[in-house]
Amino acid sequence: MAERTAVSKQEIYDAVEAREDDIVEFLREFVAIDTENPPGRNYREGAEFLGEAMADRGYDTETIEVPDDVVAEHYPDRTDHERVNVLGRKSGDADSEGERDDDGPHVHFTGHFDVVPAGEDWTYDPYDPVVEDGRLYGRGSSDMKSGIAASLFAVDALEAAGVDLRGSVTQSMTVDEETGGFTGLGHLVDEGYISPENTDYCVYTECFDSSRICLGHRGVLKFHVTARGEKAHGCMAHDGANAVMAMNDFLTRVGEYEDELHERTTDLPVTPAESRNADISATMVDAGYSENVIPDRCRATFYRVLVPGETVESAREEIRDLMDAAESATGHGFDYEEIMFAEPASVPEDCEVGRAYTDNILDFYDETDPVVSPGSDDQRFVVNDAGIEECIVYGPGLLDQAHVVDEYVPIEEVVTAAKVMAASTADLMGVTE
Ligand SMILES: [Zn+2]
Image 1 (cartoon, rainbow, N blue to C red):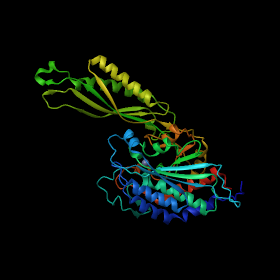
Image 2 (cartoon, rainbow, N blue to C red):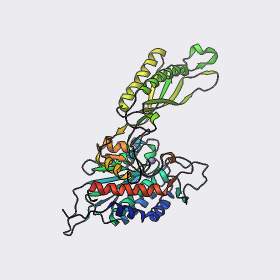
Image 3 (tube, rainbow, N blue to C red):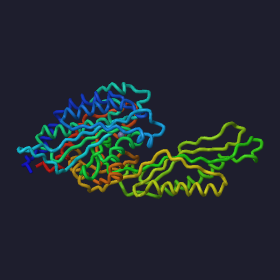
Image 4 (spheres, rainbow, N blue to C red):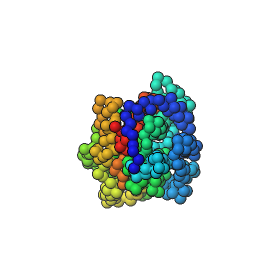
């Protein structure tokens, strides 16, 4: 193995700082590409922009298009546009004999470049980013194009500071996170682009604030339950079977179940603390034709939140039990239709990648506490499906800026996160003094 020259943290931090203008310039161009999802706009343009950015930096890049049948399997109603992901890999530098140091560690940064629809009422143009008072405004500035910018420039800075990359650095940028991630990071994991064989440490660069790492997230199960009945005229209701009243029985059971779920708590640092339990909410109800018709169907929609330790299959079973009970009590039939699920995920606080990031965050903040997200995100594919426990979420951007009107990211946030990413990568590669 070639001799390595140790590099100081300060040299790495200075190299990131020297790139601040370039980071802003990159983000201006990147945020200007409208990658709204839904519907899933301009994915190819986004992937090309990122692929070129990586090719310019010497990464071996690959465009990963998702085959139609895979898209149809996950999104049967949304097969109308192409899903284009991109991945770049950079191996350890060659030593004086031309030998590449490729034994590791292998570090993988991943982020999503789709954004939620901008919607109305913006003061700024969501796709013509401006910088004002140290903030860059635009859709996706926090969630999470700045995370992608931070990891790209972090690696640039490492190299500029004279760090020989050991092992490899891989960066992947994916689509469809905002609608479940199955054809984005989920697909990359399914296809083996991220596996224990090629990845030692993974950092998902979603916006959780540069001051803390995120260790996992709660899970979710979204579904409809439909009560069946029989239509009749309102003046001869005895001829029908009222699906609304049958649903009333089911909803009452869901209310009791909700109380039970609130007692099902987790010790993990889910933030906000009010979210440290399982939950279920009825979010939509749809039934009826006219004020004089007994309804033959009533459909309610539910949002079930799972804490780490629960599984989607166990949640499904509990729902089925509630349906069975309502069926015997009312004599009505009930149907279940699933919309989407995401298993909860979490990794131990003392994993190596978590410790490296925590140490370096403390160069910029007096204290830091890890969090677990109340929602769900793409981290689950890496942790649960690829089976990689050395995977944390760390990225710039403010969680309360995700999905809002006039979304912005403080430039300082992006710079700080890039510094932490660069220093932590160097630590994981064992090249810092
Ligand atoms: Zn996001």
